[in-house]
Length: 329
Ligand code: ACO
Image (tube, rainbow, N blue to C red; front, side, top):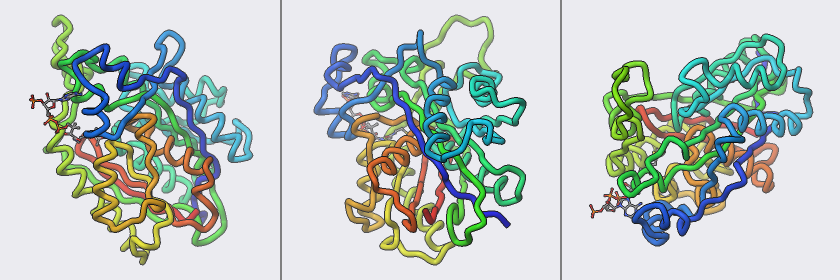
């Protein structure tokens, strides 16, 4: 049976960098409040006239494909993870297929928000292990900035999120004990309304005027925090136990970049050293499905992900959904 492994990584964030001071001009907030509660200093926002969710995914993918040392035409399947697709339908995966000129290969969209990339990786892992595909593009891409209330009434949400894309090429290998060791997926839909955008779906009240309360994301921040700090360690431990490892064996944990305070809580709970946890939310904010592939790509670029390392990816988000992947690099 082939093993699956990540053969290439890439990420792209739009050039426009928005500081907390910039946000102070748009809403009643402060650099101090944002840094203290979230750890975020800057995020990147698109120029919507020149960028798209699929387009940013393509930019990240081309870097990932180059780093995988393969050609674009070697990709045989696309998995696109986002909560901010270009259209309500079709999904953005088909747009990537078209923009990359990839014949008529299959393209699948994943709607699992912050956990989307790990869910996508899990699907890619299964397809590779069954021998169905050899090189799968797994993309996380988000444009949050155009879908948030960036006035004072939306400040508890809009200071947190940013735009960007990350991509991984998941490839087949005959090497044993290498690559994706296991993935673990969970959901609990009774919490769906704790973090949601109500009206961007087919149950919307057609013909009704724009209703900001229903269009913009709403979040019960305290409850999200409470569940996140429980589910993250749970699903990380599930992956470690499944593969006979302890938390001290992790070389690098890449948690979904939800909020620096959540990541620090997980680090303390799991008794991990600073060098065992990678965070870049300070620079990019929370980019939802893109946060893990951006962080993994950046960590790899910085030489923090090396052959033989035990890498753990873990996510929690809207749904609620949560997931982990343990990788022997
Ligand atoms: N700037 C200034 N003041 C603000 C802001 C802001 N951006 N946002 C909220 N406030 C105010 C509120 O109005 C409130 O004022 P009041 O006391 O006068 O009513 C006060 O700050 C406290 O509001 P809370 O919502 O209780 O703020 P809290 O301390 O819980 O912090 C936060 C909010 C940071 C969102 C926190 O709940 C949290 O970290 N939650 C975790 C959720 C999270 O990080 N989600 C990320 C996305 S989900 C995911 O990826 C898993």
